[in-house]
Length: 142
Image (cartoon, rainbow, N blue to C red; front, side):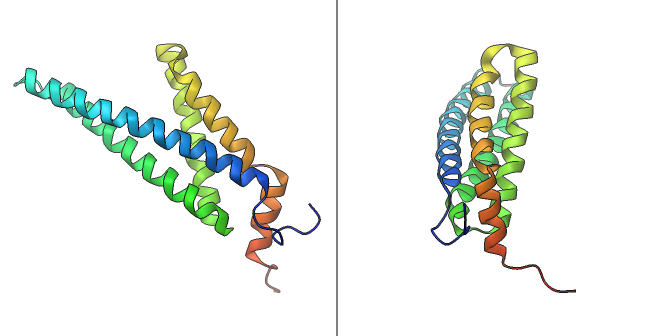
């Protein structure tokens, strides 16, 4: 890339955004299922709300992840550094969580790792890094 930032976001930003939208959609579907499951569990077990409480905590975490992924996916084309960094952090957390899930539950954690790795691949591409740096402007003189 000869002149980063002149022609808009590089291809890696678009690729990362696609995978972030897919992740947000899958998390939203999973959250709906968790909400239904927590409601049924709370209705059937009147005294024991521990498991339903854990499902609600998981639901809250999923909703926060959905919001962060959507906000980052929407604001990445602006070239600002904070959505880029936030997206990298969220995707790294997803990879770590996927590894823990694979260790505990088997192959269930493979899909989140694959989607997060593909998003990270786009976010960490040299053209994307150069474009983000160019959007910040020149370094201030000391």
